[in-house]
Length: 309
Image (tube, rainbow, N blue to C red):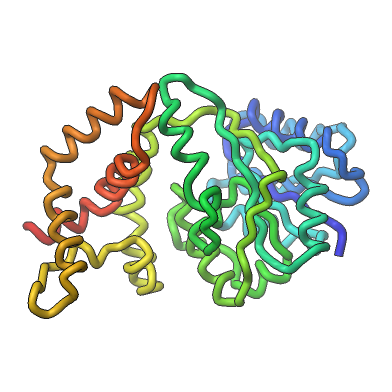
C-alpha cells in the first residue's frame, strides 16, 4: 500500500480550486506517489477548460459532468476512477498543508482505519466564538465515530469505500448529509475512525453563525427524515427521542426531565433570546452549550412544529 488518489469535487469555484491545486503542487510527498482527480460537476465558469489546459507538475485528470449531479455522484465517480489503493477526499475550497499527503500515507502504513484530518478555518474576528466552537468539537474532543466523517479532509482505503457501497446519491448533498450516511456504512464494516491532527487543510473562506444555523435547518427539514427512514439509529444519534411526549410513570425520571427541558427550549421566545445573546457575544465568548442548543433547535424544529400542530 502506498499510492494515493486525491479526489476533489468542484462546481463553479475556479478561483479557490486553483488554490487547492496549488497547495497539492507543494506537497512534500513525491508527485510520483499520488495523482489528483478533479470531478467537475457541470461548472460554467471555465473550470473544465482550465483543467484541460493544466500544465503543472501534478498527475492531474478531470472527469466532467455535463449537468450538475450532486456531490455524492461526483465523489463516487472519482473513487471509481481512482488508481490509488488509498483515497484522500478533499473539498475544492481547502488548502492542504505541505505534509498532508505524507502524513496520511504514514497513517495508513501504520494501522488500519478511516482517517479524519484537521480543518482550520480562516480567522474572522466577528465569528471568533463560533470558530473556536467548530475547532474544538467532535473529533477534536476525542469523539471517534462515524458522525465525525466529514469529507472536507479525510482518507480511507479505496477498497473500504467500494465495500461500503459508496455515497448514496439519493441523499441531498448539503451540510455533509451524504458524508454521515457513508460514514455509518463504513462503521458497519467494523472500521475505526482515527483523528490525524497533522494532516491539516485550511478552509479558504470563513463560516458564519447565520450559515451554520441555516444549514442546520435545511438538514433537519430536507435530509434528516431520509436518514431516519433509511437508518433508524439516526433517531438516537440526533436525539430526536427527546421530542417525544413525556411519560413520567413509564420512563426513567432523568429522561422525563430531559424531555421537559427540551420542550421548554423549543419555545420560540427562548430561542430568540438565546440567538441574540450568541450574535452579540460571537466576537468574544459564547459557551459551547449555547451553540449546541441553537443547532439542535434549528435541526429539529420541523419535528416540534409538526407534533404541536
